[in-house]
Image (tube, rainbow, N blue to C red; front, side):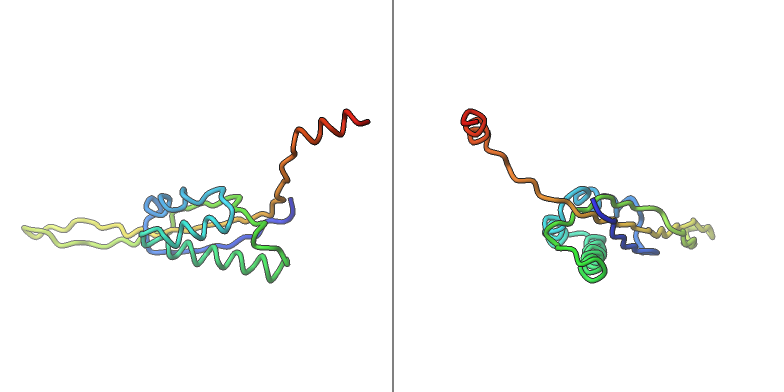
Amino acid sequence: MSQEIVAKLRYFRQGPRKMRLVVDMIRGRNVARALQILELTNKKSARAILKLLQSAVANAKHNFSLNEDNLRISKITVDGGPVLKRWMPKAHGRATPIRERTSHINLYLSEFVKKEKINKKKVKEIKVKK
């Protein structure tokens, strides 16, 4: 394995719990499949994660001259960011707190080498000939 490519998205205005639903679908997948999944996912966070993944792939191509076909999402985490605290007026002069959460996403790509499948029959034939 070679170096890891890192891309970060910080202060995204959606809760980490909702973001993790989308992130769990692409964790550990190769880049081409992850891009397909994100383009077809109907969630607000999918669009932001798609842009982040495209940015990471562009970093890999430009900075490290890596091929997109050999990239895999090695690690992706969603952490909570700062919480914006607001107040909602309610009946009888009361107010209830509202917590507007934010998220930080860290995306790590790594290069993998595709292994060719070994035909067991050919291996046996080669051993027999020797």
